[in-house]
Image 1 (cartoon, one colour):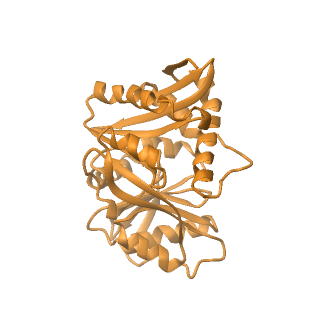
Image 2 (spheres, rainbow, N blue to C red; image 1 turned 90 degrees about the vertical axis):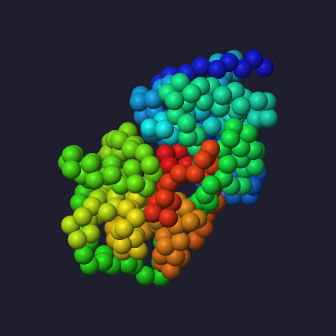
Image 3 (cartoon, rainbow, N blue to C red; image 1 turned 135 degrees about the horizontal axis):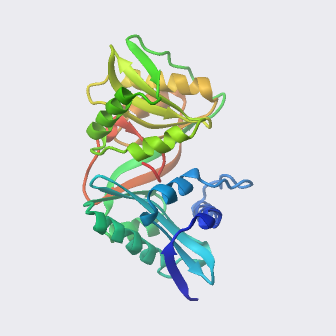
Amino acid sequence: MTVTYRHAKMEDIQAVSDVYWASVSEVYRVHGFETEHSVYHPVNPYYTFALREEPEGFFIAEDAQKVVGATISWVRGSLWFLSHLFILPEYQGRGIGKVLLNRTLENCIRVGADLLSVITMAFNPASIALYMGKGMYPIESIYLLSLRPGSARNTPESPPGTSREVLGRSSRQWEDISLIDEEVLGISRARHHQFFQEDKKVKGYLLRYKGRAVAYAYLWPDGRIGPLAALQDAPYKDVLKAFIKLARDLSPELTMMVPGSNKTALGVAFSLGFTIRKPYLLLSSRPFGIWERYIFHSPGMM
């Protein structure tokens, strides 16, 4: 086996997707989780976006011109985030993941980011050990929750005093969103919002309480809620109920990635009939984020 490493190209996207699904399906199988998307394996549109916007963080590993692994990372301000790292099951345990991780970390060093972070499955000790070896340690538990059709106990009503705006191209809206991100996450991430806005099926909303912008959320056609971020002085339970009400109008099944410290969101979710599907971990080289005011989009985009 002679494995080579290089930056990804657009013609690699389908192969990268195939490797991802093979890798994640094997992890699910080994740890007793039902394999999702067992028939149709879609290509994550973020791969094309990442290659277009931040190609310096996108590497692949090849064996005889066959893609056997890939990694994607992004940088926002001082934060370097490992979005994806996956290897074909038959190539795991050969040090390929370590090499790919080192390659993408070179970009972190080059741009001067000093905060390293990643989200991984809490039931995958090999990945956790790899990241801890690079100085990223668990700082937050995350729970993927789901609400199945017909299992909802009730539907929250939009609370009084709140109003919503569909996200568009208003400069005022993006200023409000940037302020929310800065307070909750400590970073601004216009590129992520650009990606969300490019998907015409997603619904983005800015929530105002008594006229003031206090939160935003993206609601997806498959029922995913997130990312969702709210200012510390926002009426958070009301914010959650307003967005869940909107999401229920769009999809009969809902999912959310909720931080373990977000007790308000967990309480609201369980009262409505959500259940835990999978556990994840947020690892970081140092603490950051106000996670009790946040709901994640995905392990890859935080």
